[in-house]
Image 1: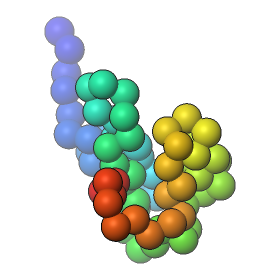
Image 2: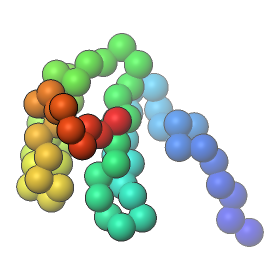
Image 3: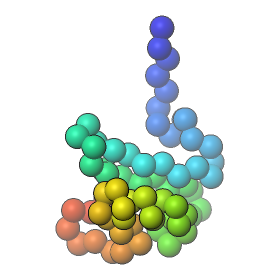
Length: 66
């Protein structure tokens, strides 16, 4: 039997999380409480840029990730 837990419950207080849609697109970035967009770890910035073509350090007007 598989136990499911809510996404936020699977994270520690200082964990970052990526939310990816069913078709493999980056849908959101979970930022831990007390952190800001400018605090995103460089490895996450690089991964989002290389894999998803999104610079999470930029302000977006359209197609904003959450």
